[in-house]
Length: 286
Image 1 (cartoon, rainbow, N blue to C red):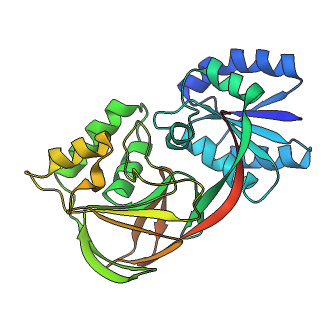
Image 2 (image 1 turned 45 degrees about the vertical axis):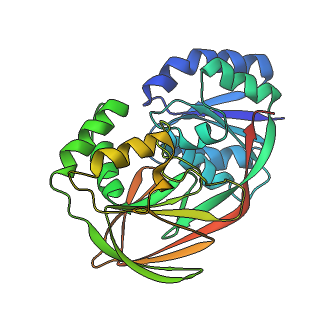
Image 3 (image 1 turned 60 degrees about the vertical axis):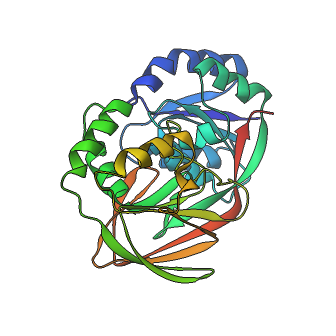
């Protein structure tokens, strides 16, 4: 099938992988293009579709994946992933995470899988969207010149001291609830990335989204919550609220930030989250 690689050279790991990507492309009759600015990956994906490409491969982090996937959603084209970012929630959930050599091998031997996607205030997302603390962290993290998991943790720790939780009114399939929350995540997959499982039971092809409400973090519950996040047992305690459904309406006291796959946007007091069932083809391991 006609294949095009879209590489984000601003991602350090993607830049290091360009040699292997070019060699693979030359051996398999594929083409390679590089992004030059924010949102350029979306333009390049649209051009790839217009050129008749059936497999379009995102080489970069979650932002690059989102920019390419949003264009392919609802089309017959297949998304390939060469994860090169610090999180890689979608790739880890689908079993794609690992070395560039392994990811290139999956492009040869993998099979397409039809997955759900989400919308948050009209913005497409494929891993996790949310508001509260995680949206604030995403905004601060995106301003850093150097990123990585360690920088994410240090940024989170610094922000925690000054962050004040808000109270949210959430309308869902089963009714309405009002609750204070430290962070509110709406997940299509089980994790943010780096095995931080915010929605351990989430399935990417069940036609539903998983909403997780984390309570206000205090001195005594902070470390246990963090431990459960990485152990995949966040929902084991009664302090964390979990809702599952095709749509959520979240109301908050004032406009503010939301994030979609780590990219931030300004939104109003009411934010709509909705699933788009079986809307994206992704090349996955057999």
